[in-house]
Picture 1 (cartoon, helix red, strand yellow):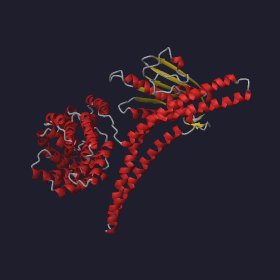
Picture 2 (picture 1 turned 135 degrees about the vertical axis):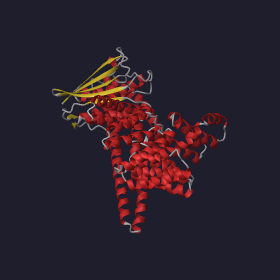
Picture 3 (picture 1 turned 45 degrees about the horizontal axis):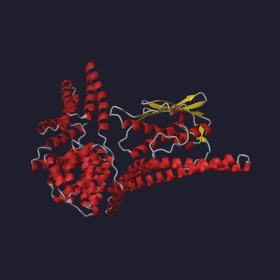
Picture 4 (picture 1 turned 45 degrees about the vertical axis):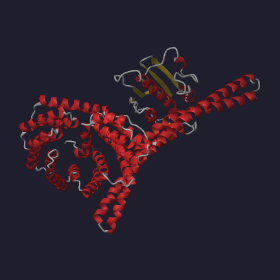
Length: 638
């Protein structure tokens, strides 16, 4: 089945297509335009112009426009640039961020009581819900968009509204509703003489009739759609038409015709390329040739299907764009993190000086047992303070990552809460009208929203619990713990912490856990802290190496657990820059660090060593080759 959200893209890409022809003139206007409001409009126009081909550049211009709008306190300018950001994130497939910006755009428009083009906000929000296959909410916003467009008597927009409604109903397998709205869309297309949309409209007729197994009408509309699609070079619609005919001929047991049209559809999809369609059609042809016992051809298309899955994954990875944060709360969080690190640095120097003084006193008073005992108690307190300082420093580094991770579920909770509030108001109206059927329908929508709120709330709760687990003081009490789950939890926590500081960083995480390992009797907070220090060092090593190499280098962190008779081994390995031979014997010494000033306390590995060897009677060993990576092996008693 084709994936076509033409209507969702048309509304905010029409401007981009028009502006692409004027990109050079806009770029020339930018440096000579001093008026802030005009500069914002130019930057927004450039963002649209570059959206289809260069989303990174589109993002840059949208961000520049947003910052300028904030600087001159131009709320309308903020709104259009926030909408442009939503378009960028929707284009690259980050639906959560797109929805966040579209809803913010709608909120500002409502605050300003700026009702011009408010339908665009509704339409864009519906497009995200369609992409997420949440068709109920997509329809909710589509009907809002259509209502506004009908008030404005914007026939062109109404055409796209009706087409999108038909497409959503067709995906929901509601053929009657799909046909009703596609008929309206067809009428407007004829009225406006819009042949660009005619191919997509006729194709939707074909898709709808095929869904109810009316192959005669489906075949008719697929064939009517083909010349329109060829005229405007709409290869996605053309692929869908040929693939639809291939499926029809297969149902009629006309296998030669089915193969012919299937190959036509596949050739167009591969040339585009449309990876999802290539995957679906190659799987279809594999099954078709297998039924005909033409195994060589079946094997060929099966191999193509497998290769396309890999390409589809790679294409999705390439389209990732750096996630930029503007939220003032996160900016303040970064400032607070820097302040905590500075205070911890001062405290660290004070603690080091205090420890030195206590050591001198201990030597001078070694003959006095009581005084020595008191001194040892103070040294233990100092060590505890050092541990807490190191923990708070690492917690500060993790905070940005935690904030990033918790933002998405909270956004969903807020969004679904707002939608539920609107639905409740509608329910009250329907109750007053005694429209029981509609009340039940709305109640079901509210129930689904509440389930989603619960789901995302639990996700946020889990993230918070992970942070609290790390920040709380160790009880020193051993308890039975799932070591595999503990390793996995702190590996993700460490990764989120680094990405909170550097959104461009990515690494492959590989885990190989021995399921035969029973729960270990350990102090989970302390072992988790030791593991976190190892993971933090591993991520730091691969990140530093990546800065000096090209894209051929793939940072990789692997964690493995093994049962060794009555012991358990944990292996943490990275392919970072490694540890020089002349310092490898020093890495477990307190205050020894190879990191630049201000980036490391020199206590992480020392504390990890003490936790493993002294507190848990285990061992920790390191092996490293400079330039190739490091490997830490922890052995604990089971």
